Length: 147
Image 1: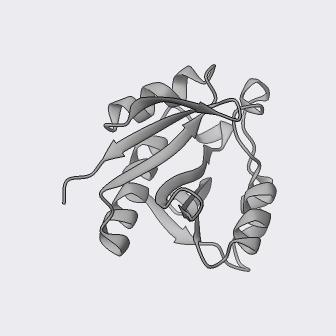
Image 2 (image 1 turned 90 degrees about the horizontal axis):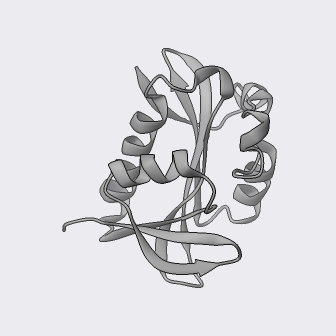
């Protein structure tokens, strides 16, 4: 069972130890980088540990992007030893549900490195679509959420 849990003193070391495959490193931020950003943007960032059957398996962080006035899936990765088991799909659905339930969002945005075909497939399967916008080397994708 996949679940999102708050980042705590009890799980931070396990989160910091999570890694992606070498070829994925240019696609995602590390947990340490993401948590540093969450600390600085603590008023608008919502970081969670992704757990699978009680074991830390990844990281997801949603946020309110003040400069653009929308909610975003900001950071997301699944540990290399936990990939290809549906955990990412379940964690993404939980992150989307969090934003819908807590903020009643009408849309969720995310950025994707153009070469990250696995992420594009996952986001497309969840209902995200490429907006046509590119910024800072990232494609902007959006999920429209019925209200």
